Each structure stands twice: as C-alpha cells, then as structure tokens.
Length: 168
Ligand code: FEO
Image 1: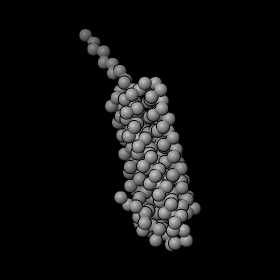
Image 2: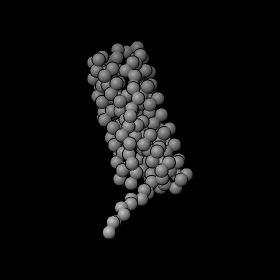
Image 3: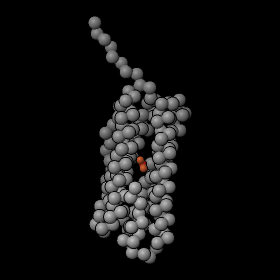
Image 4: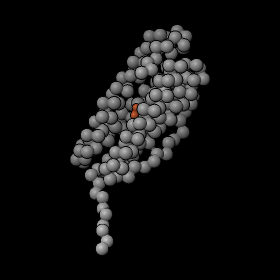
C-alpha cells in the first residue's frame, strides 16, 4: 500500500515569495558589505574594514535564518541570485551613506513582508519577522550614529575617524 506523504505548508504562499525575495536582499547586503570592506582595506582603515567584514557575516546569518525558516515550515527556500554590486565609493561618508540606503531598502522589504503576513493571517511568519523589525531599527540607528560621527569629525584625517568606528 502506498503511503501518501504530503507536507502541508503552514506559511502563506504570498509571504513565502516575499521571504524568498528577502533572502536575496540579505545576500545582496552581505555582498555590498564585502565590497565596502575591500575599499577600507585598500586604505588601511582597519576598524572600518572589520566593521564591514562583521556586517557581511551578519547579513549572511540573516539570509540563512530566513532560508531555514522557510524550509523548516514546509516551504521551498530559493538559493539567491545576487546582482552585481558597486566597488566604487567617493569617500568614507559615501560608504556609510550607501550602507544606510541599503539598510533602508531592507527595512522597507521587511515591513512589507510583516504587513503581508498580518493581512493574510500567517501568524507564524509574522512572529518570525518581528525579530527582523527590531534588528533593522538597530541597524539603521548604528549607521546613522556613524554618519553623525563622520560629520562631527569633518576635515580630520581618515585614520583618526577610523579609530572611532565601532568594531563590536
Ligand atoms: Fe539583514 Fe541589515 O539587513
């Protein structure tokens, strides 16, 4: 006798699509941060370099968290195809402005997925995404603080600003 194995998905299909898009955005963020780490490395900005290496790792962790969540709940996580990222930055400020722009893009996508989860009654995803909502608020705040620091130290040598970039 044949046993039918059917795994019902607790997640809503529209939310899974958004979560798969989120996987790509997190991986893209990780790639962008690697490009930024290279820019800093070429200028011997050691704290800045560590900051972006750590960010790249963190974004990959976010990507994996969503990837496993989808698969663990009966969905199908898609390995992301990441668009090419720029390695050109005009200045240290330009670097962190690009970082903030990227974080805002991720935040907007998280909020959209969160709203969709609530709208379609996918409470599993809604609960899961709560962590990301908080995380994004912290991430944006961190970059804004660094931009304030750069503005405050305008005209100072890059190495001196680099010494103030948080590495933890
Ligand atoms: Fe995971 Fe900062 O986006």
